[in-house]
Image (cartoon, rainbow, N blue to C red; front, side, top):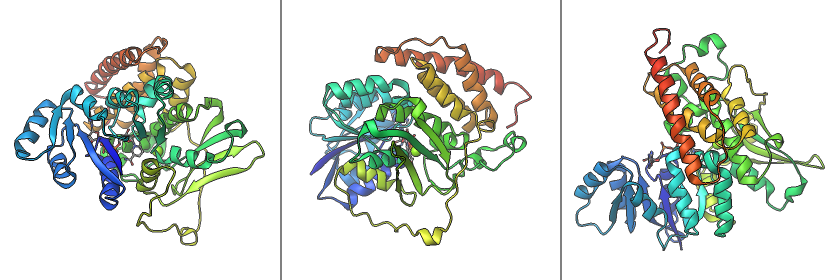
Length: 392
Ligand code: NAD
Ligand code: MG
């Protein structure tokens, strides 16, 4: 029986992971769950899975949850220390890291330091402090299994192959809901349009990241640290159907890819039960029915965020953490209808331009750059949201 902690259990990845646990009760047990503020969902999960402990990031939410769960055996913790306690529970074998954003860095790192194997969905910490996370993982004998569908595909396409034979990693990108829009149309994109992802049902933040292609920028940085491959060997191809999840080219020009219908339960299950595969009750891929798979080069002019990801990675040091934090602030401001779609890239660009990159030697360096960038991009957003020229 594998004992599992899920950080971010009420989110899109978290609920998919619990769906797998519910279907394989002899294989997995949920011993710890955490959430930000969603009391109703976490209560439901406590009643369904009886975890030993849960934590809510928000103290007031935890107090409401305690009142609703009187008489149940689950310990309810709260705040940063509560998250850390659940992330490091002695009985846990695997921690599924599925919080959204930089908020996942500290608890995920705590789990690594406690020697827990990690199934990593939460890509932002890898962007902020990838080298540090991998150093800690090595030090504590921890394996980090990718959950992100592209990285799971790369991981699966590397199995049984030698790292020194790899020529290129090719990440696929769906292109998102706005791929076919003109530059003129992109000026007037609404939140509703940007949230309509063609192939995946995900949380709001990553869905907006997919619409700007920043998701792919973050994933390039994630791939660099997960697989210890330089940026020069990581490429992106737009593949509208999201059937080929990514590819690895070897030096004999052989290309190995992983395919499947777009359902996150497949990569989540692989990370949860590596190397054994779980018999998931999902539809099979029918290539004849799909008929055509299409591929395009990314359009860096219309979607500058992918290039910003590469740029931050090449600059190195604190710059990726700054990119990530500015993106989080700008995406939230867009979702709150304070800035326009094109202002997301503009805000990140201006924040990066204002930053003096420094080395990330400790976690405090990454968190300091994160805090600086949140303040800076917050100022930029304030100035944009009071300007009458902004298109909402
Ligand atoms: P989501 O918004 O659906 O869920 C986020 C979870 O994190 C929720 O449980 C929420 O309560 C918790 N949370 C939010 N803010 C928090 C905070 N400040 N402190 C503690 N907990 C907090 O997000 P998601 O779509 O499930 O994505 C989670 C992560 O996985 C992201 O990093 C995303 O990029 C990555 N990812 C998601 C998908 C997908 O299909 N959804 C695919 C690949 C990668
Ligand atoms: Mg992905």
